[in-house]
Image 1 (cartoon, rainbow, N blue to C red):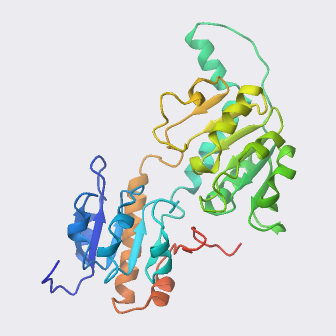
Image 2: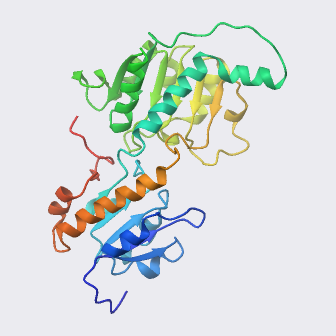
Image 3: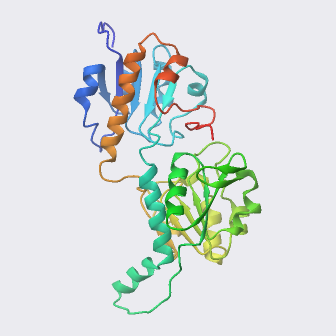
Amino acid sequence: MAGVTSTKPQLVLLGADDAPGPYNLAELEALADVRQCTVETLPQVLPGADVLVVWDFFSRALRDNWGGATQSLRWVHVCAAGVDSLLFDELADSDIVVTNAHGVFDQPIAEFVLASILARDKRLHESARLQSSHDWVWRETTRTAGSSVLVIGTGGIGRAIARLLRAVGMRVTGAGRTARHDDPDFGEVRATDELSTYVGEFDNVVVVAPLTAQTEGMIDASVLSAMRSDAHLVNVGRGRLVDEAALADALRSGGIGAASLDVFVTEPLPDDSPLWDFDNVAISAHMSGDVVGWRDELADQVLDNLRRYVEAGRQAGGEELSTALRNVVDKRRGYVASGR
């Protein structure tokens, strides 16, 4: 970018080879000098950039090219709710403002969680298997209203899940960093560091916490062994929140009743994973938030924040940008802090 004289901010758009870019590229280009790139070409375009938009939201390319970013980069936006793939110590220690796609996936993931619970309670997965073999088998199902659910993670997605599950009559409790008894969406929130002492009280356990150093592996053998033998585990957070080997053992031994898994330690899930072969496990391909139109919502969010960035001015400091931009990530906590 040497020799660029435009007064527009210099924006690098890191895309993926196999995915379409934002539909509103022309509107972005009206506000900024946009340079599109992939992981392979990022080193050539990143030096001199003011803004990096990580459209390829699982990319770790910024970490690998950090030396070319430190002189000019002031704002990084990642088009994902989780920022675990993006954050690293040098970025966290810098004055660069990080924003994410907070809010876009809340309702779709809440609907996916409700569908997962209903499918298990109403034995829909069993019905599909019986239909494929032309077997007519009468069975009783479970009433969902009145059943209990623990939602681990009290951010925007967890709150959307809590509101929707309450609407169908489920008894919802939250689990977060600090315990409290007056939460507007959960009512009661229990401390996650005491998870194994109370997780056995719930019919369903939904994992949607952000992946951080504190939450990685939080659903381990001790927590799984404390769950009810008929409990249903739903993971729509990150695969590394759950010890997959311990989960396979719990499912094999009858330690828990079922699991609905949308995220995994390794994605795609390897062919030799034992999780594929359990009749009481429902597997989906990291798609719980991906409803029709989700990329357009992400693009609208980028455009809105770019307008705010331009209005704030290129000379604004990190504190001013943090106030001007939406969905600013607390780089130490690893998520957008809501104050709750």
